[in-house]
Image (cartoon, rainbow, N blue to C red):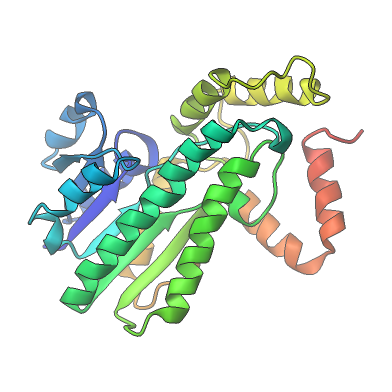
Length: 275
């Protein structure tokens, strides 16, 4: 039985992927932060570990667990969203975001690579985003955290001398999950004042989007991501990017064939920055 470590399993993509792989015969080790999220995993026979990936000591403790040293694959999915215009982004909130999404994930990544080098093989999948390669209003901080992961993975793939250690990025667009709820919570807790912002109207529109729980056209589900993870794990040779959802595919190819300034104009109109 193959064993996989999955982070961010409290809900959404991580939880769904953990349950999907468990049903397919994988032994799943699910990493969560809060004990209240454990029963939904443990009742399915999933091994639960606790770790806050913003805390290096907790990560160190997790990887000192002998059970972690026997994994065959890892899906690094933990992270959270953040909504703010570039000029309004609070430096402390930015540091917290990067510490979780980028630094914490990078720490996990390095430790998993060491395990797989010792084993001679292993598979690594990392949740990135459409905004890692396309700029979107109010997503600069979040996009920066994901773009950093993209560069890390693509650089490692060049540096890596063992083809049996495979690493890929999963780049979804909008996904129906609790991710938006966390982003809304961070948004509402922000210390930056938007009252006098020249983007006041756009901020109100963003808040409406985050509060809207209805599924929009072309929005992916956690199940969609889980199936991509399964596909990647079963592939003989993993891709660099696994694009998920129509918006992601559309923007990926759009930016390759038209000038950047045209892409910018399209995005500005989409987000109602231009009439």
